[in-house]
Length: 123
Image (cartoon, rainbow, N blue to C red; front, side, top):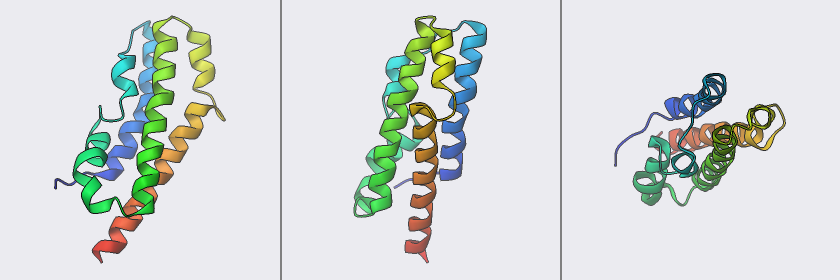
């Protein structure tokens, strides 16, 4: 089983907000289909493959898996809005209290809880 830097996973998913703002400001398209796949990133691949056997019994693992899937689904909605040039809608979707914002916060918390559970198990 390969290790993953869960702190980097939080940073990587936080960076999506900047990616969306950059795409809006530059009028760039994004690969919404790929973004929607929770296995399209290192965290998703780790959760789906390497971590599943060793951690599937942990509530925090299952919570992280669900939060990660939800994050990618919400991120893909923003990508589709950007691709359709619905920039005002995409900007609203990036605001506070939105489904994307809540999914992002939930994912960060879920990863943090998983890190704590893994650290406890190792000690």
